[in-house]
Length: 198
Image (cartoon, rainbow, N blue to C red):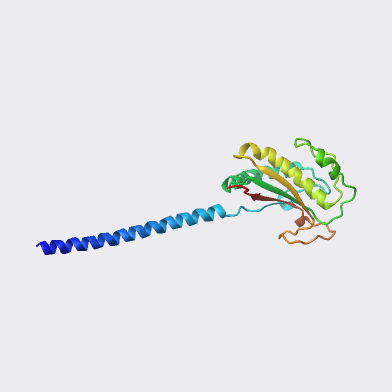
């Protein structure tokens, strides 16, 4: 009787050892999957948002003023922009103005007026002497609008930085200076979301 009890006890101990090994292996597997998923989610890149003329993001020719239609279209996109900022913990939004290749007549006064302008100042009186100037003025107008509409709703400090690509970057991101034609597909504002700090 004592031999059979000892044998059962040894068999039970062996099975307990196997179940411990299996449960520990399963626990390690679950932890690995969770850590991998969290790492992938934290490294996921936010989307690039294009505001194109086909979606009512249209500036009058040679102008950087936001039309009522532009503002209304931007208002419709604000919830998605806020969601992206919160989902990816964004602290910097780059607003990039793109233009077509039509020549921009006139002389620029940006070098004279921009350094002395205050953050709350209106964007009036600026003259674009090139497509690069015009792209920057359009980006400034959109950045100013976004800052006023997003700042109260976003946790932490949100930097909104205007840039210009002028007519130098094609819709697919390649360097491709435009010809002098009226090309609506090149005129756009792009929003790039970045996270400077973790």
